[in-house]
Length: 369
Ligand SMILES: Nc1ncnc2c1ncn2[C@@H]1O[C@H](COP(=O)(O)OP(=O)(O)OP(=O)(O)O)[C@@H](O)[C@H]1O
Ligand SMILES: [Mg+2]
Image (cartoon, rainbow, N blue to C red):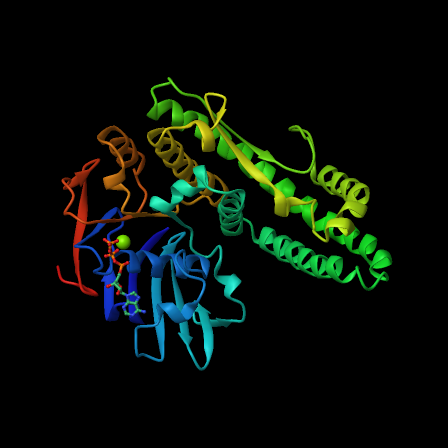
């Protein structure tokens, strides 16, 4: 997949700008607060329907303007695709993919595949379980159309169940309703857990190799999905559904007691181990960076395996965070991947793997050269 061009109208500090990208490495450089990350944010929104920095589209509208527009042209499988995303305070969100209006923002997911690596990616390694679940959800939504459907169904059921568990204190009729809802919850929750388990297993294989390369086989990683039941490689979707059904039935009284949804994949986590120890508690910052870097490369390989196409890699301000060895490893992994990098300096590379780097200077919401 290749992004050809991006047009921005009243988006953040871009009044009106068209940016064309090279199919290999693109460098957006400039001083702080000039609009480098804003470009990556716009690209990420065109791929996922969401910003990685804000949940409110209003923040993205240029100060004093009624709304913004993002137009993107990309080549996927040799065909040109267009994405148009508009937002205005009065009319809300509007999307077109290849000239056809789409009703849901979520339909944008999976059209373009992008991976964003920013200093915040470290949070996947060292932050809370919800960040890791989000990481996995975005990856699975980009690569599996059905996953998004299952996840939305599951999340809605959990939302309703949470409300019901609270109301139960005054309305005991929910005692009859909840077992019925739990049946549905196990169906969708089981599917979500099964797909996540498979994804993490694949990421684990890739990561072991990548960590081996970066750390010259001195360190060993292991990532596993932690869910409501134990499992092995032979467990199918039905197994996860049945286990969830069982656990929900066993735990229903406790859920009533605490008025909380205690069991199910909304509580799951990915355990990231380095040399057998939990990365959140034992790793140095350098080791956490190594893990984050290996995870991103593994994500890239996973998307390529599933979609048969390499995603576009967005690297926000990460070069300065990496030492020369890790930087070299990252750049060497970029072979044949379209990459858009932001940095505060005009980085000391003109070529990567003999490919020319397209450099663009960003000054106050304009690409100046
Ligand atoms: N809604 C908005 N309207 C106008 N300008 C905005 C809006 N939101 C953010 N900005 C401006 O965008 C600029 C920040 O852009 P961005 O985050 O892309 O900077 P950057 O070049 O990545 O900087 P850094 O090197 O510090 O990461 C700031 O000047 C900010 O005031
Ligand atoms: Mg920035």
